Length: 68
Image 1 (tube, helix red, strand yellow):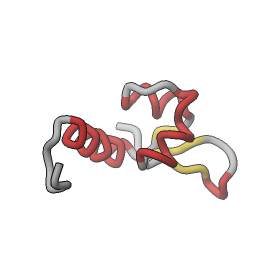
Image 2 (tube, helix red, strand yellow; image 1 turned 30 degrees about the vertical axis):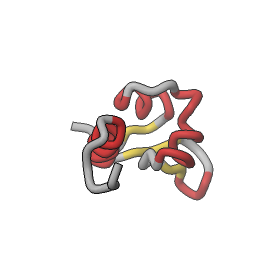
Image 3 (tube, helix red, strand yellow; image 1 turned 135 degrees about the vertical axis):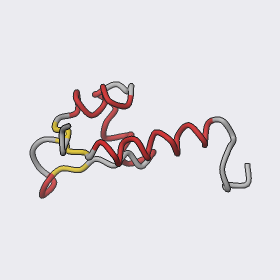
Image 4 (cartoon, helix red, strand yellow; image 1 turned 180 degrees about the vertical axis):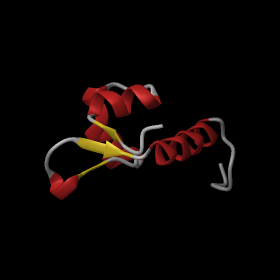
């Protein structure tokens, strides 16, 4: 088990997104990825990505407590 995914390709492959969209996903959709000190490789914890995917799923299926 990997403690941390590094790089936009690995992170986006894990969540089924285009690596070119990582900055937009972080800013607009709350993808839980970061750069240490704002520089270098993108990093993400697999458990955070899984939680994000569940929220995305529920949002797009109209589930959850958002009142939709």
